[in-house]
Structure formats: C-alpha cells, structure tokens
Length: 390
Image 1 (tube, rainbow, N blue to C red):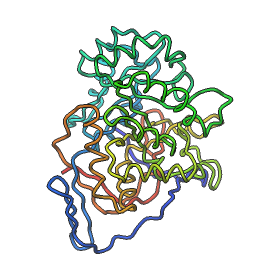
Image 2 (tube, rainbow, N blue to C red):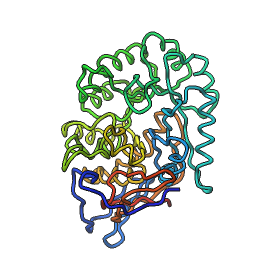
Image 3 (tube, helix red, strand yellow):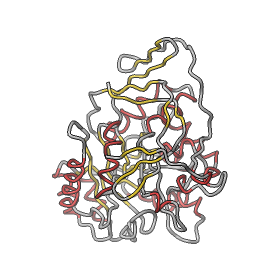
Image 4 (cartoon, one colour):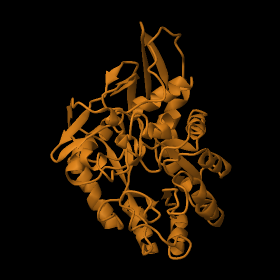
C-alpha cells in the first residue's frame, strides 16, 4: 500500500487549478429526489450518492499495481481497466490472469470489481471476441491507434481492413469498442489530433457500424462533444476526465514546464474545457466518469522525455464535485458518476452509497512505493470535497 509523503517540490512540479477554492457557507437544504440527498449540518454540506464507477482506469502491474489499486478501490465500485501493459492484454486468457493479479493486490475487505478489456491489434481474431464475451470478465475492446499514447506501439494500423471481421463480431456480441480518439500522423498538429480523428476515423466507423457501441475515451474538445451529441443515444458515449474539466493547456507551462500536468490527449484551449464542463453538467446521458488515472514513477515524469499521464485516483471525486458545484449542478453529479456508465454498458447500478462532505483536505505531496514515488494530481493543494463510504 502507498504511504503518503510530504516531499518539498520546486515551482516546476506544482499543480494549479483554474478556479479558486470556494468557502463553505450556510445554504438552504436542497432535495435531489429519493436516491440523492444534500444535508446541511451547521455550515457543513454533505452529499450522498450511489457509489460511482470509473469507466477508464490504468492500474499498471507489479509494484505500481500494488501501490495504486487501493486508491481506486476506496472510491469506486467498479472500473474499466485499460490493457496497455507490456506485453499488452490481447487475449481473454491474459485478461483473466490480469484480473486475478488485481484482485490479489486489493485490501482484504475490498469489494472492488475490475472490468477487463482487450487490446485490439491488427491480428485480433473474431473468435477472441466470442471468448471475451463468454468469459464474463471482459467488457470492452480498446482501440489504440499505433503510437498514440503509453504502450500503444502494438496498436491498430488498419482499422477498416484487417480489423473489419473483429468489428463485425463485436456488433454481434454487443461488445463495446473503447476508442483512444487521436490520429498519429506527425503532420497533424498535436492539438488537432482528436478533431482529425473524428472526421477521418470515428465518423466513418459509426456510419459503417451504426449498431456498434462506441465509447470515445477521455474527450478533450468541443468537436468531440458535438460529435457524441450528434450520434444515436445508447450507441456512442464518452468518458471525461477530471483534468480536462479543470485544466487547460496553459496549465502545462505556467511557472515553468509542468510535467505532472502532461497527459494524452494533451490539454486543450479554454473554450474546449468550457465545452466539456457544459456537456457533463447538462444532465446528458451520453457522458460519464472516466478518470484516465495513469500512474508513473516520479523519475519517469520529471525527466528529459517525460511520460504522459496524470495520477488522479486519490482526488478525482473531489475534483468532479467541485466542477458540478461551481456550475450549480450538484443535482446532476450522481448521474454522471454513478448512472450513465452502467446504463450504457448494460450493467446494474451499484447498491452501495458514498458520502461527499464539504470538508477541506490536503492532497499528499507524493505517495511512496517499493520502487520510488508517484505524484498525484494537485499534490500538496487543498481540495474542498472529501469522499468517504457510507
């Protein structure tokens, strides 16, 4: 298990938010219906919601897995676990083995349920999709364009050619395709990779397979929001991360280069951040929680060629709650965190609940594990909302 550590950081490793912390104040009691409740005790606000799930999570393996899994298990009932390990999880047998490793790394009293995925390659067979569905532990197939992100070198190079039979089999078995939506053409500007992917890959894919369930993972742009909203509800949806809701691309450079704010897809302009906030707080069923929490050892982030990924598992729910509070949309938080995801995947909603208290708390500066340190999102900063089980 990770141990928090109060490390001193230089200005170059400080996370910054786009909003200032709000003050706790006396406010009227608000009713959210029979499943949701907002309670006021003196100046303290508490929100009770159905336990959320994380529909996009990186747990890694080995010592890192053992170090980070408890953070997700403490807050979430289930998580879609990404398959981009070394080697990648390309078969059902490998997914089952990885799931066992995750379960063995959990605290003894944890009910956390890892939902596994397969890593799509040019050589994935239709039979593998059938085996995955029959396993009852694999819930999606991840599309990584080759070279798009961490450990994606084995990804797809010919989606509409070599992968066509697999896509047809996925439709037959109602197996969702989970898409990292960026092109990798070096001639395309880094900040336009998502927009170009939508027009050249995703839109043609949805037109060719209108009954294929597709999750556009960690969307970052106004273009992605508009695309998802234009598609048939129930067949195309999107996950949204905490970092893309509260940070824009200025956060990469303010006060010097900020390696712990670097992720892929990269942070975008403020107009895109605002579009994401509007989408998730609108009450739309098409958007749901997916942290894309991606732990890397500090030495692999703070170096000449730093890894992409933000470790947000310890703070994600606090950040999401702040976003919805700022938009006066706390009544819509539960649907985003706890309802839209399982509804899209055709899974039951969780029965347990968690409590979010308006209680300021300080994020640890780092988490130590056997091989080094992992720096969380907003390391050393104060956050307003504190999640806890009920």
